[in-house]
Length: 307
Image 1 (tube, rainbow, N blue to C red):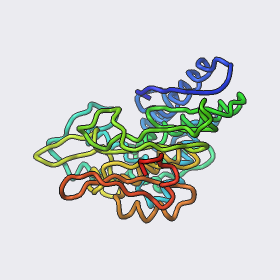
Image 2: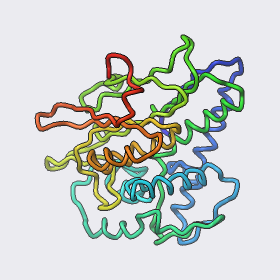
Image 3: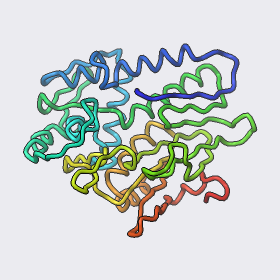
Image 4: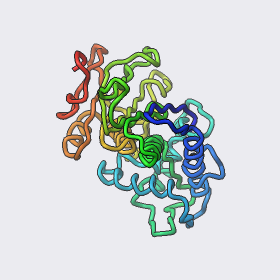
């Protein structure tokens, strides 16, 4: 997945070998950087893609994506893959786009929308041959949950799993307290380990998304890596970053991206309508000051003086 992982757990078994095998299996199905991966095979197919019944990781990411796509009215949409590449944020060469071809964007939009992909038990029917999928906004969270499930099967009751800074915490840490997880400061000038808030977790997953690091500026205009599936262009709104807590890291991961795409007003309304999903939104005022906004239930997770 092009990133690191760490696991802290209470137990005697050496699990690293099993962890590496599981992560390799997940990569082999959902990584767009691996040409033989299941998702890459779908992306290169013409119109009909046969799903291997043994490819559970691809199927689970696909099914979960459809649910969040519907719940967010399309703001979470893995079918934006061609546009992510077009804007220079995908698996192709990362390059700032100095000239914008609106006709090209319009053409790619014909393949955007999970509701355009017809699926059955063993087939996916592409709307156009150039349509592609990208699970990068949900796959790390899925991997965290899969590793957590593996630990549960080994009898582990207290652990913290992290993949690419997406986290799931279970039980208590070695001090008998809830696990403490830092939220990065949403600023391009902040160090990678600069922490804005600390949350305390148990039996919950947390994920963050932001446009404050992965972006470029052309002619004074900022283009971030989060694409608005409704327009085909990078999202232009007031949010700098989002952090989401739920009972599933995969769900937190997907919603962190969806909220960032839809902006503060829409996201603030939607999060209150969702069961067991809480969020912290970071945005800046006209003076450039970073301001936070919590959903109604997020405060319960914030550590001590950080509230």
